[in-house]
Image 1 (spheres, rainbow, N blue to C red):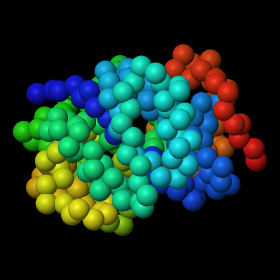
Image 2: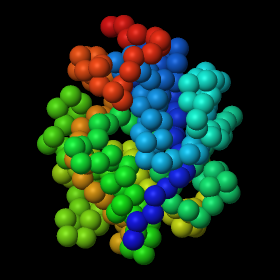
Image 3: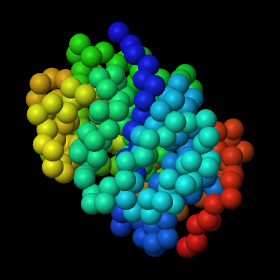
Length: 255
């Protein structure tokens, strides 16, 4: 069974402290790669996958991010969720459930940056695999041994036959999860109404055999530090002519 989500949630409220000094003057999702803010790449991928409504939580430089998205992506229905105090990754998304309802939706980290494989978009691959009868969360995975530009962390291993995930608590797994997943409201059952991490949802789904993953067939990069950002930016600046990465007028990176 496959369902194509029309809703997405981009988690964009974080402080981006590890990416300073670049985040001293802008939120982390606004940091540009090859002249294009990371979040614009994500919005573009969501729109290409058929998403019409995108929720975004806001905190650090929230007004800047809201104004940029509203002015740049006029064909998208944005729903903004300002956080006066950070709600952590779990509660931040949970706040949007009354609006989204029971349908499946994408949840994407605000700093996620990826290229699609040759056959299809990563988001559509997830949508085609989504089956609520056997999964509560479906996540995109990147093999650690394929990560060259940025450092990989072995978050998970998984059963290739069933796709079921096992978290490596020592971070020695073969796969890093890419901050991209599909879930629905069932994932949030029995979660608190106080700040909590999305990892709580992953662990609960894993315990029920309902945490499933697929391996990404394109490039994915973990952008956490200035060195990682600069390495990725250098490569993609050389490939700026790619159709899905036009240059726009945003602040340029400075060493």
